[in-house]
Length: 342
Image (cartoon, rainbow, N blue to C red):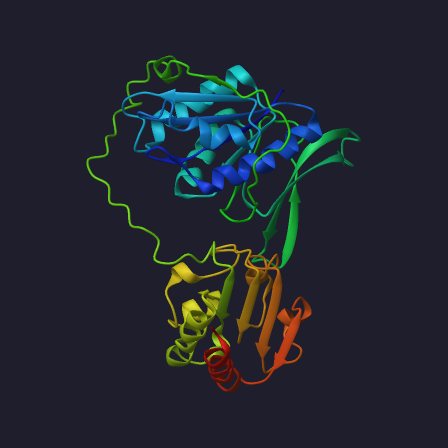
């Protein structure tokens, strides 16, 4: 059992940000294990167009599968290629994004290889494990850490005996960074048809048409996020957060309770089942701070809580707490920033 592998998702010739985040984490894991970091990218017309988006993250070997019918993504050919490549390379760890594609591809690969899969991990670490039932000791397993039971506990999952140890991670959970060390940077272009192994169904599904909509907000990349919860009370009150965010040149986020109440669109939800953000400043207005929400914003630089409950859970992680009703505090913040902003 050898190296760490990352499946890199692409849109035409653009590598997904979640894949670059996983490459950064994969490089750290590989360094701890003393092995190589390998990456896989599958598409059509990508040769010479994706390498510079992947290699700078510390990749030792990049497998580029470039052939007709491999983009847009369809389940069968991508599954066949990865399964047959993994049978050859025998990776000990394989990582994918917890995206629409990753959630389709990951279970197919893990099921075929009988390896197991932990979905939506929030942390990945290397550690040892003692199996009390068998008395066996295992070195350097992948700790696959994720919330469980509705976020009420954090579970650490290990896979002692089957390989690869597979996990998916949502976009924004890990932070990407170019690798400052030296990596081998080897690129190979295998024959995709060989890895499809003559499967007559590999290209049976063809995508006739696709419609891709650009994101309506930049919540994930915003330096300032103004987020509202159910405590905002109404959609009209919640709309005041858009005014405040505009003055601060930030974006508006929300808790799941606010989204479920119809105060705002679901694409602005921050938390375990929404977007993970890392802004310099996070202003939480009327948010109680359940663990599901906190998991999506706890790494913010400065956290400011506006809440009429001094014992609200979010106040425990906030750097500054404003105890008061949001309907009184938010208009005052808007007025102050309008007056003092340049």
